Length: 213
Image (cartoon, rainbow, N blue to C red; front, side, top):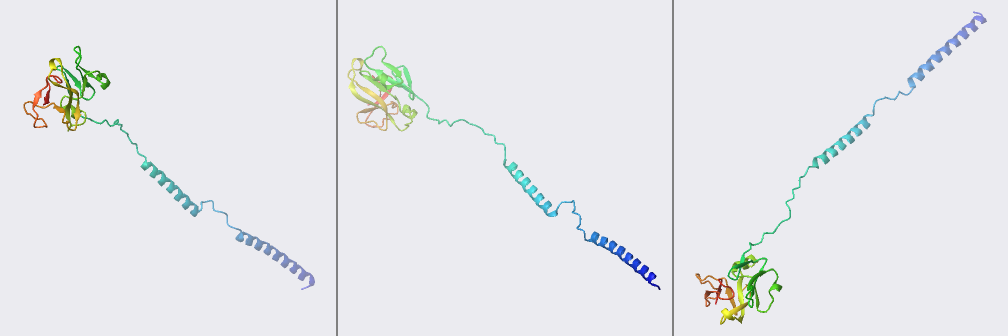
């Protein structure tokens, strides 16, 4: 083989090696390139998002479960129920409310000897006698069921009431004093608290009413 043939072979070998190197380098670059990012969602992020959504839904459901429509019924203010009213015998033909009125006996008046008043000051004249009861029932109406109706007597009558002791006031008391007369007894039952007294019909203070004397 001559020198020309050897040179040609050497040149062809160099050319073949260069092409082979170029192809190999290209293949290596393709194999070592980083993988393309997946367009799908990250499993860890999906789980966290799902947990947050579930917690929010549960919280909302819990709040809704505690919200209830409430209907408020107003029954109005409580009104205390007291004892029933009763009537005070005020003279032979007049009666007054035991809870709202006072029977006034104007002893010196011949025009209006008895009348119902709403203020004790309307029964403060000379010889006037304010009377807030004529029986024990009136005391019960005023909230004192165990009290007695007692007439305080310290005046002497005149005219048709001459020789009679008349009352200066009549009111409910826990017990009648020694100088008082119990009013509202029963002539038939003779039920005076003081067994030494007799239940009689009043002649002056309470015409038609009764008293223990």
